[in-house]
Image 1 (tube, rainbow, N blue to C red):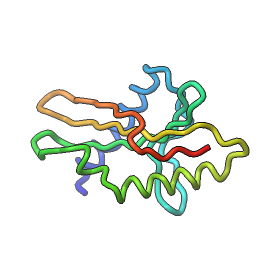
Image 2: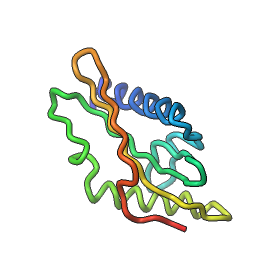
Image 3: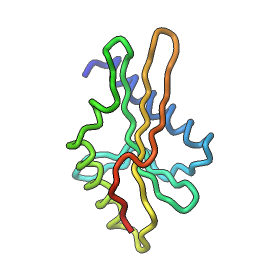
Image 4: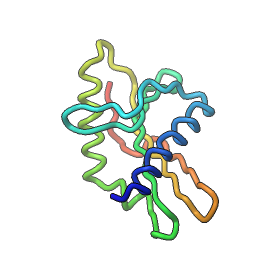
Length: 122
């Protein structure tokens, strides 16, 4: 991964967190890490805990969110969520969201897809 892509990825995560705050989400943690990997954003909306995956790319690369959030990545996010939830005393309602951030010329396009994985934990 080039430095430019890595920098854009970090910028995308910050943009996603700012977007969620504007939508009245409470950011619980960003870049939560355990031995299994990392969850980009953990937020809360009303009484629901939301695990957010952020995917970033450039329009000229033919970036497609679905291509970068495949079954393998969804399985990993489920496992990471289980690991996070194992530290909580009371299990809240949960869901998984995907935020895509695409650069195109001089603009940035952000899309928010809610409840992208059917599994919920309670």
